[in-house]
Length: 212
Image (cartoon, rainbow, N blue to C red; front, side, top):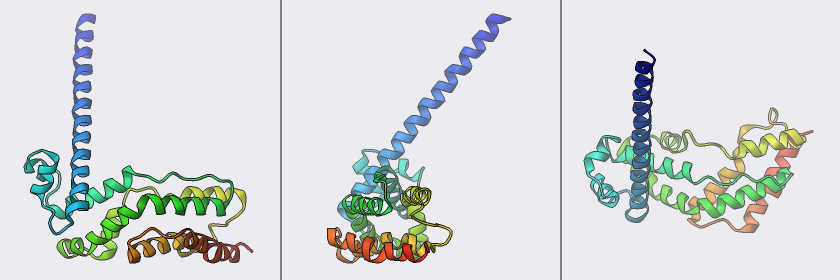
Protein backbone atom coordinates (compact mmCIF):
# COMPACT_ATOMS: atom_id res chain seq x y z
CA UNK A 1 0.00 0.00 0.00
CA UNK A 2 2.76 2.41 1.01
CA UNK A 3 4.75 1.57 -2.13
CA UNK A 4 1.67 2.30 -4.25
CA UNK A 5 1.22 5.70 -2.62
CA UNK A 6 4.87 6.54 -3.15
CA UNK A 7 4.59 5.49 -6.80
CA UNK A 8 1.50 7.65 -7.40
CA UNK A 9 3.12 10.58 -5.61
CA UNK A 10 6.18 10.28 -7.83
CA UNK A 11 3.97 10.24 -10.94
CA UNK A 12 2.07 13.34 -9.80
CA UNK A 13 5.33 15.12 -9.01
CA UNK A 14 6.69 14.28 -12.44
CA UNK A 15 3.53 15.49 -14.18
CA UNK A 16 3.55 18.73 -12.18
CA UNK A 17 7.19 19.39 -13.05
CA UNK A 18 6.51 18.68 -16.72
CA UNK A 19 3.57 21.08 -16.77
CA UNK A 20 5.69 23.72 -15.09
CA UNK A 21 8.44 23.30 -17.68
CA UNK A 22 5.87 23.53 -20.49
CA UNK A 23 4.34 26.66 -19.01
CA UNK A 24 7.79 28.17 -18.58
CA UNK A 25 8.70 27.38 -22.18
CA UNK A 26 5.38 28.91 -23.25
CA UNK A 27 6.12 32.12 -21.33
CA UNK A 28 9.62 32.33 -22.79
CA UNK A 29 8.29 31.76 -26.30
CA UNK A 30 5.64 34.44 -25.91
CA UNK A 31 8.22 36.91 -24.59
CA UNK A 32 10.47 36.16 -27.57
CA UNK A 33 7.58 36.69 -29.98
CA UNK A 34 6.69 40.02 -28.38
CA UNK A 35 10.32 41.15 -28.50
CA UNK A 36 10.39 40.29 -32.20
CA UNK A 37 7.16 42.20 -32.76
CA UNK A 38 8.56 45.26 -30.98
CA UNK A 39 11.78 45.16 -33.02
CA UNK A 40 9.76 44.89 -36.22
CA UNK A 41 7.53 47.76 -35.15
CA UNK A 42 10.51 49.96 -34.29
CA UNK A 43 12.34 49.23 -37.56
CA UNK A 44 9.55 48.81 -40.12
CA UNK A 45 6.71 50.82 -38.59
CA UNK A 46 3.08 49.85 -38.05
CA UNK A 47 2.02 50.11 -41.69
CA UNK A 48 4.66 47.66 -42.92
CA UNK A 49 4.50 45.26 -40.00
CA UNK A 50 2.67 42.01 -40.74
CA UNK A 51 2.11 38.80 -38.86
CA UNK A 52 4.36 37.14 -41.46
CA UNK A 53 7.20 39.63 -40.99
CA UNK A 54 7.12 39.17 -37.21
CA UNK A 55 7.07 35.39 -37.59
CA UNK A 56 10.07 35.58 -39.93
CA UNK A 57 11.98 37.77 -37.49
CA UNK A 58 11.15 35.37 -34.64
CA UNK A 59 12.12 32.40 -36.85
CA UNK A 60 8.80 30.65 -36.29
CA UNK A 61 5.63 29.89 -38.17
CA UNK A 62 2.87 32.49 -38.49
CA UNK A 63 0.40 29.99 -36.99
CA UNK A 64 2.29 30.30 -33.70
CA UNK A 65 1.39 34.00 -33.63
CA UNK A 66 -2.25 33.48 -34.55
CA UNK A 67 -2.66 30.99 -31.69
CA UNK A 68 -1.90 33.83 -29.29
CA UNK A 69 -3.11 36.98 -31.04
CA UNK A 70 -6.01 37.04 -33.53
CA UNK A 71 -4.65 39.91 -35.60
CA UNK A 72 -1.88 42.45 -36.08
CA UNK A 73 -3.54 45.07 -33.87
CA UNK A 74 -3.67 42.79 -30.84
CA UNK A 75 -0.07 41.69 -31.41
CA UNK A 76 1.16 45.28 -31.59
CA UNK A 77 -0.75 46.28 -28.45
CA UNK A 78 0.70 43.28 -26.62
CA UNK A 79 4.21 44.08 -27.87
CA UNK A 80 4.01 47.69 -26.69
CA UNK A 81 2.67 46.62 -23.30
CA UNK A 82 5.38 43.97 -22.95
CA UNK A 83 8.15 46.43 -23.81
CA UNK A 84 6.91 48.89 -21.20
CA UNK A 85 6.53 46.26 -18.47
CA UNK A 86 9.91 44.61 -19.02
CA UNK A 87 11.92 47.82 -19.00
CA UNK A 88 10.94 49.53 -15.76
CA UNK A 89 12.48 52.77 -14.58
CA UNK A 90 14.25 52.57 -11.22
CA UNK A 91 12.27 54.36 -8.53
CA UNK A 92 14.55 56.88 -6.76
CA UNK A 93 14.71 57.41 -3.01
CA UNK A 94 16.62 60.64 -2.42
CA UNK A 95 14.85 61.56 0.80
CA UNK A 96 12.88 64.51 -0.59
CA UNK A 97 9.93 64.89 -2.95
CA UNK A 98 11.88 67.37 -5.09
CA UNK A 99 14.88 65.10 -5.38
CA UNK A 100 12.73 62.06 -6.19
CA UNK A 101 10.74 63.88 -8.85
CA UNK A 102 13.83 65.28 -10.55
CA UNK A 103 15.51 61.86 -10.50
CA UNK A 104 12.40 60.04 -11.72
CA UNK A 105 11.73 62.46 -14.58
CA UNK A 106 15.38 62.30 -15.63
CA UNK A 107 15.28 58.49 -15.59
CA UNK A 108 12.10 58.46 -17.66
CA UNK A 109 13.61 61.01 -20.03
CA UNK A 110 16.71 58.86 -20.56
CA UNK A 111 15.00 55.47 -20.77
CA UNK A 112 11.66 56.12 -22.42
CA UNK A 113 12.31 58.52 -25.27
CA UNK A 114 12.73 55.80 -27.90
CA UNK A 115 9.63 54.07 -26.57
CA UNK A 116 7.62 57.28 -26.85
CA UNK A 117 8.85 57.89 -30.41
CA UNK A 118 7.84 54.40 -31.57
CA UNK A 119 4.46 54.52 -29.84
CA UNK A 120 3.65 57.99 -31.17
CA UNK A 121 4.50 56.86 -34.70
CA UNK A 122 2.28 53.80 -34.23
CA UNK A 123 -0.66 55.51 -32.57
CA UNK A 124 -2.57 56.85 -35.58
CA UNK A 125 -2.28 53.67 -37.62
CA UNK A 126 -3.22 51.49 -34.68
CA UNK A 127 -6.21 53.65 -33.84
CA UNK A 128 -7.47 53.61 -37.44
CA UNK A 129 -6.91 49.87 -37.87
CA UNK A 130 -8.34 48.75 -34.53
CA UNK A 131 -11.26 51.17 -34.30
CA UNK A 132 -10.29 52.01 -30.72
CA UNK A 133 -10.48 55.56 -29.42
CA UNK A 134 -7.24 57.30 -28.38
CA UNK A 135 -8.18 56.80 -24.73
CA UNK A 136 -8.82 53.09 -25.30
CA UNK A 137 -5.50 52.64 -27.09
CA UNK A 138 -3.66 54.35 -24.23
CA UNK A 139 -5.52 52.25 -21.64
CA UNK A 140 -4.57 49.05 -23.45
CA UNK A 141 -0.93 50.10 -23.66
CA UNK A 142 -0.52 50.93 -19.98
CA UNK A 143 -2.79 48.29 -18.43
CA UNK A 144 -1.19 46.15 -15.71
CA UNK A 145 1.83 48.42 -15.63
CA UNK A 146 2.94 49.76 -12.23
CA UNK A 147 2.75 53.54 -11.81
CA UNK A 148 6.24 54.58 -10.72
CA UNK A 149 5.11 57.83 -9.10
CA UNK A 150 2.91 56.02 -6.57
CA UNK A 151 5.91 54.97 -4.46
CA UNK A 152 7.44 58.44 -4.69
CA UNK A 153 4.21 60.03 -3.46
CA UNK A 154 3.74 57.41 -0.74
CA UNK A 155 7.14 58.22 0.72
CA UNK A 156 6.49 61.95 0.44
CA UNK A 157 3.20 61.45 2.30
CA UNK A 158 5.04 59.64 5.11
CA UNK A 159 7.54 62.51 5.36
CA UNK A 160 4.73 65.04 5.53
CA UNK A 161 5.66 66.74 2.26
CA UNK A 162 2.36 66.05 0.54
CA UNK A 163 -1.28 65.35 1.34
CA UNK A 164 -2.58 63.09 -1.39
CA UNK A 165 -6.16 63.43 -0.18
CA UNK A 166 -6.07 67.17 -0.92
CA UNK A 167 -3.97 67.25 -4.08
CA UNK A 168 -6.00 66.66 -7.29
CA UNK A 169 -4.90 63.72 -9.40
CA UNK A 170 -4.36 66.12 -12.31
CA UNK A 171 -1.61 67.83 -10.30
CA UNK A 172 0.06 64.51 -9.44
CA UNK A 173 0.13 63.38 -13.05
CA UNK A 174 0.99 66.80 -14.50
CA UNK A 175 4.82 66.44 -14.52
CA UNK A 176 4.59 63.16 -16.43
CA UNK A 177 1.92 64.47 -18.79
CA UNK A 178 4.13 67.46 -19.63
CA UNK A 179 7.16 65.23 -20.20
CA UNK A 180 5.17 62.95 -22.48
CA UNK A 181 3.79 65.94 -24.38
CA UNK A 182 7.27 67.39 -24.89
CA UNK A 183 8.67 64.09 -26.15
CA UNK A 184 5.71 63.54 -28.47
CA UNK A 185 5.97 67.04 -29.92
CA UNK A 186 9.74 67.09 -30.42
CA UNK A 187 10.55 63.35 -30.65
CA UNK A 188 13.58 64.21 -28.52
CA UNK A 189 14.46 63.93 -24.82
CA UNK A 190 13.57 66.93 -22.68
CA UNK A 191 16.41 69.21 -21.64
CA UNK A 192 17.70 69.26 -18.07
CA UNK A 193 16.44 72.84 -17.68
CA UNK A 194 12.97 71.83 -18.83
CA UNK A 195 12.79 69.04 -16.25
CA UNK A 196 13.88 71.41 -13.48
CA UNK A 197 11.29 73.96 -14.61
CA UNK A 198 8.50 71.38 -14.54
CA UNK A 199 9.38 70.40 -10.97
CA UNK A 200 10.40 73.72 -9.41
CA UNK A 201 8.16 76.22 -11.17
CA UNK A 202 5.04 74.18 -11.91
CA UNK A 203 4.71 71.05 -9.79
CA UNK A 204 6.07 72.04 -6.37
CA UNK A 205 4.20 75.39 -6.17
CA UNK A 206 0.95 73.52 -6.84
CA UNK A 207 1.80 70.92 -4.19
CA UNK A 208 2.51 73.72 -1.71
CA UNK A 209 -0.82 75.38 -2.50
CA UNK A 210 -2.67 72.24 -1.41
CA UNK A 211 -0.48 71.68 1.66
CA UNK A 212 -1.53 74.67 3.72
